[in-house]
Length: 515
Image 1 (tube, helix red, strand yellow):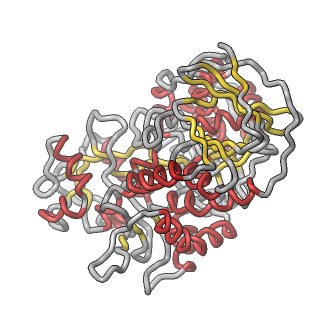
Image 2: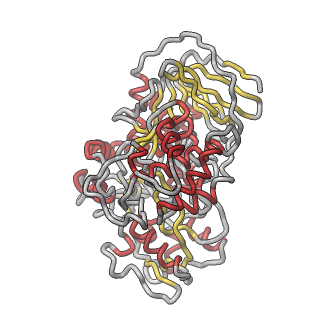
């Protein structure tokens, strides 16, 4: 495949068309920036599927300290408190910034913002747009703003295959599309590529969300953090559709309860009940499913005929599956939803590689710890996009011509690794299954085939999960069910992960192999 080198005059390149990428590009204006998306804008990103909203302390009974405490409690000992404090303090202004872009959040008749309640929040602090279509509305409005901004050059339907690094610094982005391959010489690249849910069979994420940005960062030599922590949303609509439609946590916030097939509410004695942290609720549902019971979300008493007005999108999804949520319980099951781990970044979104930033779900800022608090993800993307843009704009660069590698990896395909990942890295994990997964994934990750990128990301997650010999937040091991007294973040590079995987003996595994 021939490689076209396109002169972009050293402009920064933002990779990803979700909320994190769109807002980073908008915040960089009027500086020229190139926005790359692997699909037409408005498609293929997790952001547009988000039913939930953005968390911010906007109510009269709320404040940043309450939001901070809730976030830290959900994060199960691994949140970076300084990051949490900074994000929750910035969240209300981020909401106002989004409103200035043109997003109309739902309001009461008196024009006060309508604030929702979701799991593990002590206050009503979730803002929504168009009821249960917050992500779609945000993406729609932000795309319109991007289209109006002359300084943003958007290149759609191209997939980034490599970040070219020389002397420890990014020098180019190599992408491929229908028209061929192109190299964009730049010393400033921002990953905003989303999460890893597409590595699982049961997921709320698009199939393309397989950890693309993590693979790019790993190949570039960047450090990754807390990869083992993958959040499973408790209530995806149980059916054959993929990605699985989400039944938003806001439905439980309005009083819906979880019942088994006998009609019994199995979370009645759990602290927080249906609004316990997501990891707790997901495991409770998993245990019901594991013994052969079906699980349903019952909104008949709490919402009944009001369901369609409050959650029109979810009501339509249910009806398409033959369920009327006003009169029928909704069949649900957990699905891979959000990655708390990602590219290790500092307070400005900088990775360990010069010239590489990360923003949104692909980044690990320390905000979410071991278990994300509901609706903090869009908030994090909105808040940190401005910090990343400020850092990128303030970084000097030189336009020294460099020769780019002509190596173009094959188009990635995660289908071969999904059964492996789903079996070994689900809600409940054990060392034997994960070691077998590592042995299977290692030769694929080391090869140059379509599954290599997804296999590499899966391998690194499995290595990180094997190294955490405890249960914490979204990482639950049947062979290590207790907390460690010392809560430590995990760190990996491609080199250390491959070394650990190669050293792994399936008959006996010791944590010191990861050190």
